[in-house]
Image (cartoon, rainbow, N blue to C red):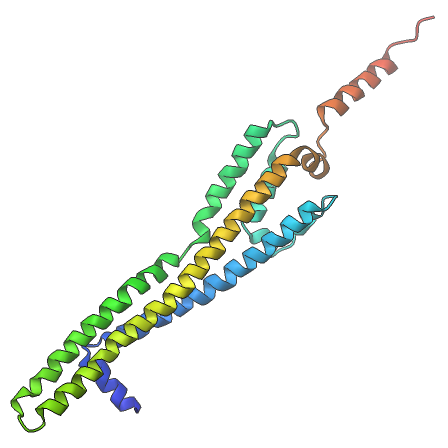
Amino acid sequence: MDISHLLELANDSGGTLYIMLVLLLIALTVIIERTRYLSFMESGGAKLIALLKKPGNQADDFVTTKKISELPHARLFDVVHNEPANVDRDTFDAHLEEAIMHEVPGLDRSLWILDTVITLAPLLGLFGTIVGMFNAFHVLGDMQNGASQITGGIAEALIATASGLMIAIIGLIFFNALHTRVRVVLHQLETIKIMLVNRHARLNGSTNGHVTPSSAQSGNASVELIRTPARA
């Protein structure tokens, strides 16, 4: 099957094979871009969770790196830096949840394009097959070679349907895989949120240098002892 024959098949399908080629290129572009991005997000979130489990404040230093600072996980640490040390648990939790909600739309960006390709490709393939069958039945007037030409034309017309189904199958496999990665990243964000809420007093005290209420009271008591003269 040479190039000229493929072009003839594409023309006989009403041009739908050309459109499906474009759809395939679009689907592959979305698949490659989202796979790379979500894989990086997933690995970065796993490293942050592992660092938060260790004693010390190593995760905060890891977030300051250039690549990690671009991840949605880093927005949660921005909330930590902007919160006062004496913030209550419910308010802190609500602020972290708000930060997560702002990052959610970017997680499944462009996946709607892949979903559209999965739905549209089989329909275009069916349309191309119907157009090809119309062309195949035009040879009915030739009684001598009509049967062989009709069967050959129908077989060639079915290539459009097969192409549409192939694109839909490839797209569906990667669409489900990418959605799984999105759910994993969302679970990482929720996990980091809970870990930060449970550690917010220690993390705020070490990163922002805030003075806790207990330390502030002890400091004021020391000042009063210095200012008050000793009684005989």
